[in-house]
Each structure stands twice: as C-alpha cells, then as structure tokens.
Amino acid sequence: MKRPALDLWFERVFGDADTGAFGSGWMSGVASVFLGATGVGGVCVFAFPEWLSTERFRALYPVAILRSGLEVVIGLAFVLGAISLLLRRRKVLGLTGVGLAVVASLLGGGRVAVPGVRDRSLELGLDWFLLNLLLLTLVFVPIERLFPRRPEQGVFRAGWTTDGLHFLISHVAVQALTFLILFPATTLARLWQPEALQAALRSQPVVVQFLEIVFVADLTQYLVHRAFHRVPRLWRFHAVHHSSRDLDWIAGSRLHLVDILATRSLVFLPLFLLGFRESALNAYLAFVSFHAVFIHANLRFRFRALEPFLVMPRFHHWHHAAADEARDRNFAVHLPWLDRAFGTAYLPEERWPESYGIAGDPVPEGYVSQMAYPFR
Ligand SMILES: [Zn+2]
Ligand SMILES: [Zn+2]
Figure 1 (cartoon, helix red, strand yellow):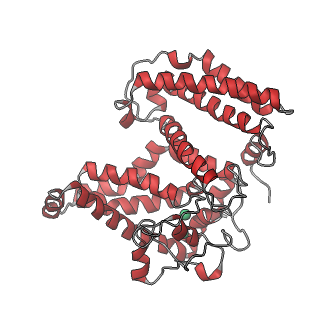
Figure 2 (figure 1 turned 180 degrees about the horizontal axis):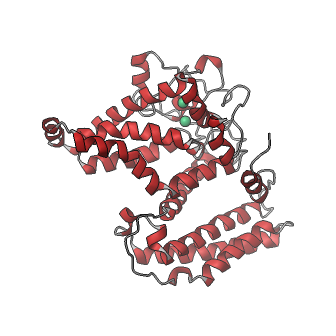
C-alpha cells in the first residue's frame, strides 16, 4: 500500500530512526528544535492573535509574563542549538533549532507588536496547542523518565510523529471541533429543557455537581465506547486509538476525528441538558484533559489506594492490551466500578499487559492514512 506523501515527508524530517546517547548532542538538539518551534509559534500567536489565539483565553493571559517567557524560550533554543552543533556530527538538529530561534527573533521575539483584535468567525487554537504541549511535556516527560513502566521505551518511540500530529490537529482545530461537539446539545436545548430538574441540580454545591458530572459523563462514555467496540463499522474508527503499540502520555491523542466528535458530543449532551453550573463544567473539563492523558502514561505506579475508585494507568493499559483475555474490557475512563457493575472489568492482581495494540496491526501508521483507514 502506498503511503501518503505528507506522512513520508514528516517521517523523513523528524525521523524516528536516529537516536543518540547522552553527550551526542541529540538531547540538546531535540530540545532546541522543540523550543525554537515553540518560540516561532508563540511570536505568531502574539502577531496574529485574532487568527491564532482562542477567544476564551485571551482575556486571561498575563501578557508581560508570557513575553518574558517567550524571550527565555528563544534564548534557550539558541544556546541548546549551539551546544548540539558543537557536539554532534550531523548538524540538522542544531541548525534547525538555531534557525527557528533566529526566525522567532527576526519576527520580534518577546517584543513583537500586538495588533488590535477584531472578532473572527474562524480562529486556530495555536495558543492552546503551545501552552498545553509545554505544560504536558514539563509534567509527563520527566516523570515518565524517572518512573517508567517500560524503561526501554524512549520519548521518541516509534509512532510518536503520528501521535504528535493527532495532538497538534485536535488542538489547533479546537474551535471547529468545539462548535461541532456542542451543536447537538445546543440544538436540542432550544427545543426542550427540564427546567425544574436544572434548578434543583444547580442549587447544589459545586463540588457535588462536579462529582455528578463525572458520573454522568463516564456512564455515557461507557455506553458509547462499548458501542464503538461492538459495532464493526464503528470499530474501524475506534481501532485507530487501539493501534498504538507503545503507551505514553501522548498516545492517548491518537483518535479518529469521527471518534472524537461522536463520543464527545454524546457525552456532552446530557451534561448540557441537565444545566450544571459553568464553574462545575469547567472544573470537569480541566479534570478530563489531565486524566485522559494520565491514564495512558508510561508510569509504573499502581496508586493502590485509588485504584478501586478512579481509573489509573494500569486499568486503562489493560483496555489497550493485545492479549485475548483483555479484549473488550475496561470501557470506563474515570470510574472503574462502572465496568465492575456491568461485568466488563479486567484487572489481574499485580500484573501489567505484556504488549499493546491489535493483533495483525490492521491500522497503518501516519495521520492521513489513519484518517482514511475506516473509509477503505
Ligand atoms: Zn476502546
Ligand atoms: Zn486509550
């Protein structure tokens, strides 16, 4: 089967094959490219806020701190790129990092002018992508290095470019995705709303509402998720998520857009109709964005005290296991006792899965190939 040109190009430029030991200039080179790209992206967000930043976040930004942070990021990209150039025989990483830092500086660096903002009907969530990427890499890359479930698995394991593209696109397209996800709920809410029930729910403390949201959301998610496993046409979409052979914090981003839209719009529908307070819904959104990443992490802790009540990495790792006895188990993503109640839980004492993925590897590598896969 011929691989799409974009997937091949992405692999060649950011190839998985080249590795390097400590002192080879590889780590400084990779960090320099990462920071340089973040610097260019950050300057672009400042220069074109109405196109590249998310309207909801704009008012919340501490602009002076972000500007200084941007200067630091660009400066570090320079220094680390220079170190990589000195240490490494192949100069592609160092040159790319330094080049990106030069471009970010020429565009204005942390002093780039910010134009006035008009309302746009289309905006890209580049700010959301850059901030979430920085935050998640700062949290998960060190703890996965320090306490790995599989020590031999590196940050740039096979398939990371594919997962990186899934992460990039689902963040940058956040506005369009949010609109589509909310569309069924807002349409239905115009026709009918259970007003007495809404008033009763809204009068409860926010913490209680938050716990109710977690329960309602995961119950809906459980049913939709199970349907995605049971119905062959739906499984072809969800198989993309299960195609990862290595699990880590970014592997959870590997999701077909149809899977994202169908699951999230159905999960959101009852939450919206029940009329929970916005503060409780926002708390849930913050929780789910962290928890969904966390349960995929390459992290060896069992969190024994929490394991019976809240989904921990080991529970969801068994959902991804290649072994036959674990197939179609552990559909819940927050509350493992939902699976125990429905008789679909599988969590053998002390053990972790030997391997992950789908027997025979039916799903191809590469973002474009994976989006096309269910339609073949
Ligand atoms: Zn699944
Ligand atoms: Zn998963």
